[in-house]
Image (cartoon, rainbow, N blue to C red; front, side, top):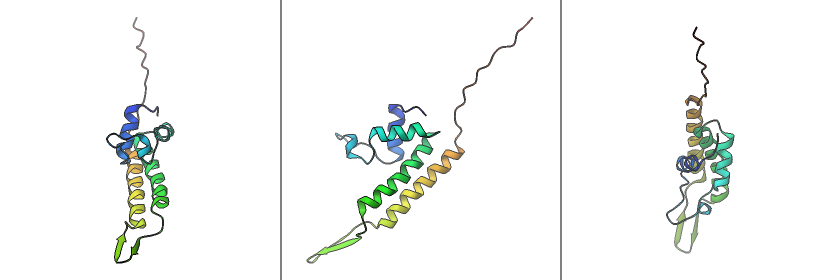
Length: 117
């Protein structure tokens, strides 16, 4: 597909990576250039979203690390479980992958009128 600003914005929404109010693309996990590459390589927006969620799962693992909770003195901090975040990201990848398979692509046809005597 050919990346356009509208497709990039749509992909950001599907990936839940919308640029915050007053922010820039560096405030998200994906740059516009990365999203353009995802769109360019995909046959539809849902295939791009599936690939994006798969990549996001890898990013979550790096970001969240392996620590689920820690305590300092009498204070205890519990973090979101890594496995839950990974399962969610991979489930979203599966959802969009299934949507991409059932989505009709666009076809350009050229019709030539018949010659009439």
